[in-house]
Length: 198
Picture (cartoon, rainbow, N blue to C red):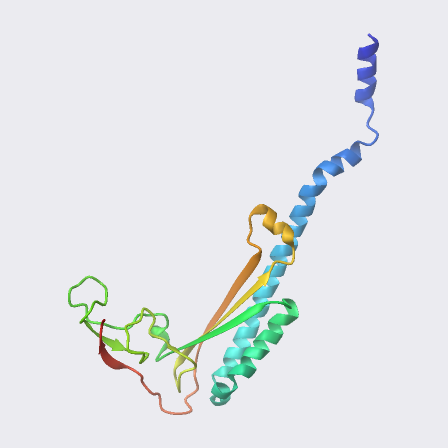
């Protein structure tokens, strides 16, 4: 009887229950809060990157843009660095004769009808590098009236390491792209020459 009486009294005691409940819930609550901070930080870094790329691309399309590549890239680095100080920022530019050619393969005559540019099949070398390419863009800013695909890739370590506990990678990679047309400061030149698939 005494044992049952002690158990009943123990069950009715609730002093310290809040501390125990908090100790059980706190780890999950902290992970959720850190996850929200991580998502917010990543979104803010992406928006900053997109804005910096758009601004740099607009400057790049004017006549003096070709002579100021490093200045534009440094402006993007500075802008991104305000939000993500230790980010690795890389740049890529590809020029196309018009917007509809962006990301498209070079034209070729599919003699055997297999959908691939095989040895001996003729193709139009749109970027002038002597081989058939899946992407017809020429590296660099191109010339007058060319459409330029400007791509910036930013890689940085997550500021909140808790995200790795739920399987997210330690590094975040963000890519921003924009396509703009160069100003008509000169006549448009073509690099396209006929070639033969290897």
